[in-house]
Image (cartoon, rainbow, N blue to C red; front, side, top):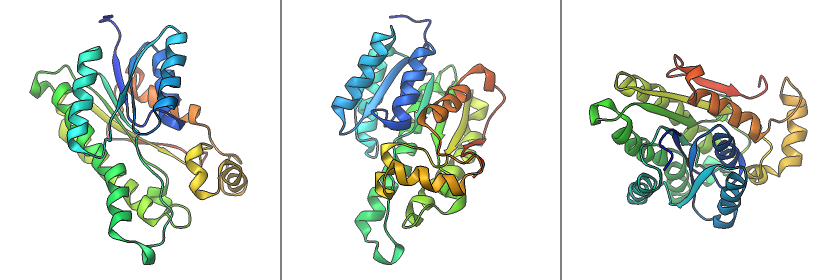
Length: 251
């Protein structure tokens, strides 16, 4: 085991923004836990790309909306790589339903994936990182969305609300664990060209929308979001805490 390398766990890392964060982290010298739920083949492709570049990574299947599975996930990461340095709470889902059509399952599934997962994973990370628990500190990065301040696209009220919860949680957690050696920040992407946008008509539609609604005149890329996440994880951001960094082209 290379004890000189830091360890990063990225939830929802089999594709899109999560995959790009995992790939960039490995190129930056991290050993990476690549969490996935259903996309095992995609997760293994991420692992393969990391290993081809000489990096170290492990694929970890877990539904991070479930507390018990999160406990097991962190135990598996402990066994593979040891002490955790950085947690990226990236797992989440988009939603497209109006409030007047919502049922209990819609809301429970959405908030479980986007909010409860962040609580459960942060809990396990804090138990390992906090100086109060004998840890050496660390970094938690939460993935929000500009939907939290713009209201999201059509049918996205519940999604926007879930990301608003992340914004509030991010600041509250920063105040709670900052004195224990843990920096906490969030990234707030805008219109990013990934397959996750299929629920809103696909990448082509998002790129078309960006031409008229984004001051920079284009959609962003997953790689551009990943660069910000890795900066927040680094010592270059050592005094950045409780902040939210928009990656939205001015939108």
